[in-house]
Amino acid sequence: MTQAVRPDPNVIDEKSLFAKITRRIVPYLFLLYIVAYIDRVNVGFAAIDMKRLLGFSDTVYGTGAAIFFLGYAFFDMPSSMMIPRVGTRLWIARIMISWGFIAALMALVRTPGSFYLMRFLLGVAEAGFVPGMLLYLTYWFPSHERARAVAKFMTATSLAGVVGGPLSSALLKLDGLYGLHGWQWLFIAEGIPTVLLGISVLFVLRDSPTQATWLRPAEQQWLVDELAADRARYGATQHHSFADAFRLPILWLLIVVYVTVQIGVYVVNLWMPLMLSNLSESPDASRIASLSTVTYLLAALVTVVVGWSSDRWNERSGHIAACMLTAAAGFALVGVATTIPLALCGFSLTAIGMFSAMGPFWALMTRNVTGSAAAAGVALVTSLGALGGFTGPYITGLLRDATHSFAGGLYTIAVLFLFAAAVSLLTRRFGRTETHAA
Image (cartoon, rainbow, N blue to C red):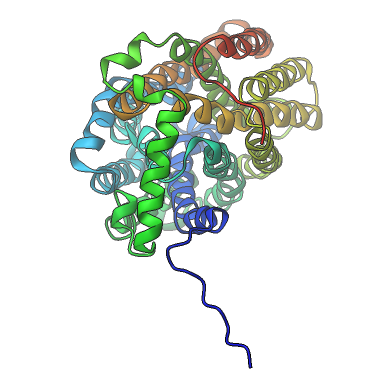
């Protein structure tokens, strides 16, 4: 009888290893990002009732929705710089617990001033979260595996809408329960789980592969060596200091793309419910929240496909440019839409383009810088992107009150995305942007 041959524990099956890492890390990070995104944009679902019950104008709502990003932008860099000092686990837990409390306290808003203050503090509390998550992925995935990992993680931004739409719709129907309005229940019920998840981070995350007890010692060492070789292979070790990040031409080109995306993302997330309600003869907040789900579901599906394609061909710039063109077409379509179905088609295109770009975008970004430069570079990108997140919703509110139309702002954003598509292709001239597919 032939004796079965046991596999050598020192032989590494690369495909199986990255599948194991993906199963252990990405779903949990995905969940964290979903609750982060819901807490950030749920004000868009609450907006219809908040405006009606609190007497907020479009300018007041747009300012409050946007001011989150000022708090985020001012504190994103210093918060991100704390991650290498104290470790991902402790800092992400601190971020989530603090923003969860503030998100729940949004239920106390009564005046424009309190609205502005709470949104600003929410941005301050969440600063550093996204850079921390993206940097954390670079500790586990080399560049040739990263776009798929980032794409799976980033689908949380679109699936947050899939989850957040029906959830917000249900919570808004609790209007009058225990004397609270539906929009107040929305903030309370979506803020508390964030605090609980923040506590769980202390027990789930590990700061490096060498601390992961679910990896064999041989797997730990192989992964550490592979990540070091990957950084050397793409020349990223040349850009290892904090100051180096500010001297990379490709970084500034990517910032142009990212700021444009953030302008578009938060115009959609924070204004789509109000834009759709404007096309309805009898707007209902819970119904509009449910309709929005379609947009995010389609974006989530395409995001995974684009991430797979980007890794399959090891190509980033062209994928990003194609996504920018798709988003531009979507914004133009929303601008001419006179019915809810047509507007939803336009919003679906914008969401598909913007969210799908993030996998190849961050793979391109993290391929070119590492070490302290990576922390500084990611924080710089997200900080300036937050200013785009402020600008889009704020200007939209001002233009809406001034012109009584959303069309002008939407056409302007479409042009910005056409420009971003051209800039995306320009990144091929700088750094190590792509290699031939295997």
